[in-house]
Length: 130
Length: 146
Image 1: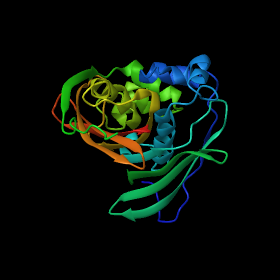
Image 2: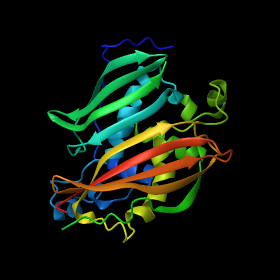
Image 3: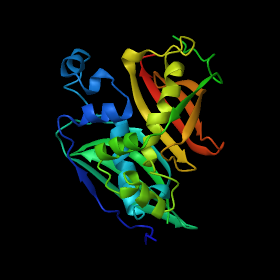
């Protein structure tokens, strides 16, 4: 059983997706939207380059919350996120969070995923069972 | 221009997806999960799961196909060129394991306009072969300039 208390910071998760991560995520998830895998298409629709899948970054948020609860995948009960900034490959993502409350064996954790100053996922809230 | 809202409450036909052990492993590796319960049957059983267990966010693999017909429905009428995935929520129930057959239905919960943007909110509900709810997803798409 993981010991989490209100106010605790969860262990930071730092991941640098490589150039091909969006291709591998597309294959794993089935989301082949060309804005994630085709630089020419991405630029043609006004993006600086290919961007990360939002749900890939949500996957990292889920991983950080699950690890904070001790690592059992069954411990994550709810996760809600807002996608705001666009995520870029080959740039470090830092997932950080703080335990907001612990009630009856369930911890609620506020989580943010950012690349530098760019918060790609904000107002994320995870509920994990302890 | 007023936003079309007649699709609110509409439901689309269910899709089914059979969860496979290697597909779980493929997903887990991309997001960097190393827990053997996602790769090894014995480890998963030792941890109390029926079979190799999917990471929670693997739910996008089996639930997103149900959303396709909803998002492309002309009655919904979303402008894809100006659309972004604005928000997402999942609430998990029974774990999804290799061999599970999961059925997912989709429904349009809300369509509304705020600050010149259109908000399109869909719900997917996924249940396994025993009728137990595996995950409930709320998908919010935002369209600029409606």
